[in-house]
Image (tube, rainbow, N blue to C red):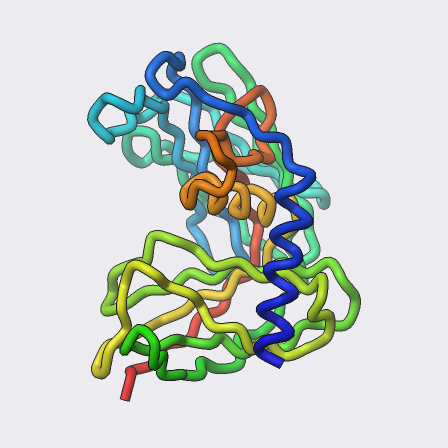
Length: 258
């Protein structure tokens, strides 16, 4: 089953990469662009929207915060909230509570421009447990998040891994194009951080909608050089903003490597 699911993910990657438009960038001559990173989940808030600006590739890797923006999150049942700027470029909710099945809308007014996005929070899929598997080739361990994909195609997942309280930079993506209704048996492939005996590993399973999946998938292609040229990830935010708006469910498990 593991080989079958791995094949399905590779096949899905080929299909998606074949139909995505690549936007080539001149990394040293771009005007600064707005970057919006917004998350809302079914876990208790506050939820955060981070707004910053890009810098040229040759400049220091410090992204200037965007202050004084008006940030509003609303949903399809009539709730709305204007977020509070708690620190430069960081905007947070006070009363909003994410609910699976609802569609959420983001509206940002910053530097005389408006940016909008929407994201539908999928139904919850529970993270049942974490299975540990020794990786003989690399001499370390792999973690397999076990969860039951519901019947019916169109489910998308993002896994975030933390090792000894340090977040692994990369996220790992699943979809059910070729594994509909099956129990996941695919490990989180981590090529930068080894997992060894005694490590504490936690995994967050996010159920995400398709536009968010495409954003992180295209980001993965960019960071691994699969696009052949630097390119912007496929954002779900309007007006040529970079970033994403992710309404997702969230479940976590933790394990100590024996």
